[in-house]
Length: 215
Ligand code: SF4
Ligand code: SF4
View (cartoon, rainbow, N blue to C red):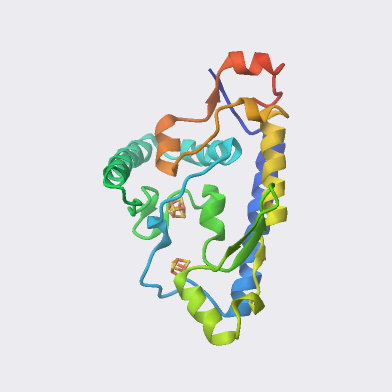
């Protein structure tokens, strides 16, 4: 197996994409006078799967910067999280467990958190590669604000996620090569990513596609 590593340029690119996301989020949040301050909820207990090698590799960069004691502690919580998710799913329920990276309300790997963590909250719209347009109304608190301020929620400002997603897809291709589709599809929670270790791909797969350069 060969580890998928982000080189300096791709690490910089993912940081720029995340910064752009944050900027757009802030613009919409400011226009709506929305913030998470005083929220009784915490979105870090929402169940999400993540789908890119690039984000997985970037999350793992952050994990590697932690001391070994913190890493062990975190992995212990990841194991508990996975057990909890399995138990909920066995009952046919959507898991709702606090993310193992959340420590007393703060994200242990804040600078390395994933796209979903950065975009949830305010309304957004996104066009999928198959042309389907998806609308995200924002979290429950934001929806309440939108309802009070606008006759129809389509009038509310929203983050245009499509260009951001396109940049992430292009970064993923830069990392994995044009034959990205030959690799196993990533479909993991943050806990599973950390427990699995850094993203790795089989050498036979790299050779079949003639090598992907950055992996
Ligand atoms: S990675 Fe951080 S921001 Fe994302 S759900 Fe976990 S604790 Fe929350
Ligand atoms: S995004 Fe919404 S629900 Fe989540 S913490 Fe912020 S205000 Fe609360």
